[in-house]
Image (cartoon, rainbow, N blue to C red; front, side):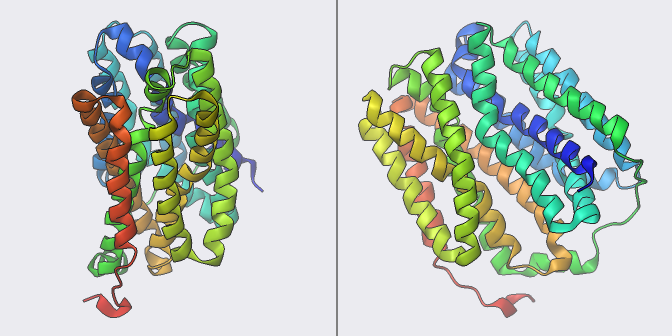
Length: 378
């Protein structure tokens, strides 16, 4: 396979690690800048909101620009923003440094998937998606470990900056020039917006991601406050969470290949179950190790389930357009989840965040039984 595909996967790993890597150091940032943990959570939710809002506009405005130039530009912005984050003198500057790359985040993702599909079809796309998958399960423990190892929260931002730098150099040296084009979404793509099944799946996607991140966004704080773990133990637990997530990602892919709807419903029930266990056994060390392992293995399925359920129900000609909608919905869900989790923490304490995730998952589970006829497109 063309080596440029692997470089794109590395770039995807860098930008997703930048987005989620802050999760593991939220308690530290909260103490460092003297803000509440729910306020610190805006570093994640504001990033996701910006991605969700900017995605369709930034893509439409850059269709005629050389794709290699745009990819390098995005990674350059990520390198600079991570360095700005590391040297932020106060929380306001840190928030600005976080939001800056979020405007360009969807641009890298959309171009990477399009280039991968053109060069190597579904197999190449899966390689780029692997960069995302590994980042979502290992990016957090890596950045958390870096901060703990160097006893400095800035180390996590230096790490993500270095990852993006390597991808930037790879793009510059090994990816050929790719002229842009002036194509706009065709009538066949916009027509899919009349499909009620699409909207049902998009709503379910937002609910699923909101449920996942209402609790996962504050997992480090939960382990610190409820499980009474220190920085090293939390880093190990997050690494365990991520490692089991890789296994879960593989198992979920196999299960979805056999029966998408049954697997989706089982996923919802399993994620509910493991979070309820975390609530009742969160104060006991050994059971919590087992619970976090299971949680990580199940959690990663939340990225695959909505994607497969949604894309399998739309025409092949509209996949690129639908994927852009999914990108927005994923980030809307992440931002809403982080916001709701923060509100629960502010009012009831970090132990109660589980009870925000559970009703959201139950709603998504119930929606999986709603059937809309295929010929519902007007």
